[in-house]
Image 1 (cartoon, helix red, strand yellow):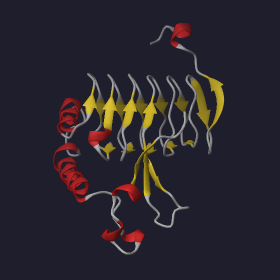
Image 2: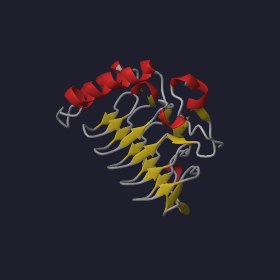
Image 3: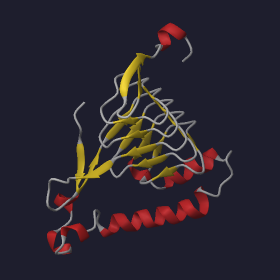
Image 4: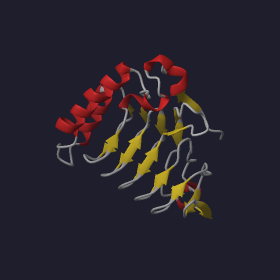
Length: 201
């Protein structure tokens, strides 16, 4: 799947904002204000909440525009950069320390798992453009995909249904459905058993 640039700061932020393009903000003032309010809410209401209060944290995410199916489990030390760009089917899990950096929409299929200290990176900068603009990408994580602890996913990379990114690995290209990937950069090391074969899903 080709990378889908959803947001290019060079096309959204006027040049007159700052003479030095490196000093221009990546987002409009309204967006920065919305993220400030969310960060205050996260610090005061989301992060200190007891671990079993998953419904409460899901409620807070929905209040800021997230689309969550039933049974989603977001632990208190998980971090969502922009809830309004988060779309989850049922039973999606984000463990403590998981960081979802989503300046552009990120979609998670049913039973997708984001384990401890994972970093999902939804944006980068165009270093070949003298304006050095932020580029944000839509990203998709298929049903039953699993990002294992301390793994990272590069901007614009998608995970197919049932794919697995192993412990501490870094995905720089799309992961095929039901493939198991490991390493830096991650390469396919085996096929995962499909539910038809295991009957476990």
